[in-house]
Length: 139
Length: 235
Image (cartoon, rainbow over all chains, first blue to last red; front, side):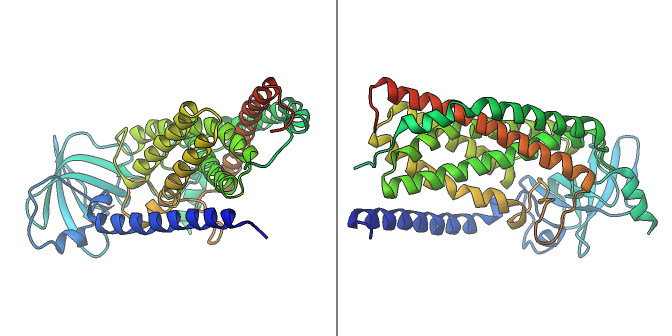
């Protein structure tokens, strides 16, 4: 069959791959907290103490929770288990609407209040023409 | 000891192929672009910016596919000492890099109106950026160690290091919270993209794959000519 050298090279490649996969897995696992782009309201509730540094919270904008004043906008981020109130002053992206995904960047006041300095709209994986959306809603 | 192969025989086929590939590419691209830009509907939420996806997603797929192919060929070439596979890998890389950059740039252009930011350091976007760095590393290694055995070894190591990143890119959106949305296309559980949008997406993917094939053939022919010019019939 194959020569000794070929087999050795095969095992060498296999070993390098295995070592890499394992070490990358361990590194990513231990860095998980920093790899995630945002935390959910449930994760915020589970915090033992309130962090003073800038964080991001993501979830859905609760239906009928947006209230706009002249410069300030208030809404609730929910993950359908826990909720968090967000206060923000500034421009929101066009796709920021009720019932859709959102990521807010800013500071926690306490476990129920979040002062956002930046709002990002999160898009979901659903793509369809408006007519199809209307038809779906009718059902 | 590298196995022999005959560049002349291969060249007689690959030197004639580009014009047919070019013709097919132009046809598929015209169909894809007309579908993507004119006939496909706008999205219920994003409006017309959904059309960016028809370039963004195929470009990302192509760059991931090419990197996987390069890795596979390099490993086989390294284990069995097949010189030809390294020349193929080397010729594939440039279009992979270009499509990777296109995916990042179009993603950024899409992100501004949709998310409200040009760039986010989330897992998907960052891992795609890392892939660009691996492509650059790979190509620079070829520049430094011109076609000799050292280049074969070093580029193989680079692809092995880089390939770990490919499943991370694929599953980043499922493993972690990311700003980037999860995959819309799932072979097993059905897709969350409407058929009228899926067709231009797949056509554009075919067009990009053909373009990569075209650039590959041109690069590969150059490599073969280089060998010919050295006056070697066999290598």
